[in-house]
Length: 94
Image (cartoon, rainbow, N blue to C red):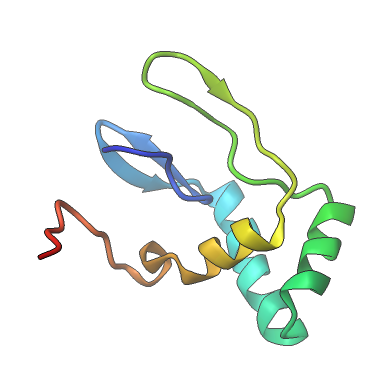
């Protein structure tokens, strides 16, 4: 696996495993976006509630802290195909 794991998932033995505590946050993000229909308003709400991007530890032990969720991160999360069960693996673009 390369890159960082999506919010709501952890990597164990090179496989994605749902982190139920964070999965609740992801469900809330999708639900609130459907209700608000505004990334800006949702970002403000998430900031007030202290919700950040995923904090994780790299394979070599470096720690990456979560940062406040901005519109760019939120938009990327909302479009992430992993949340609908699609995983990109070794794609070729020609």
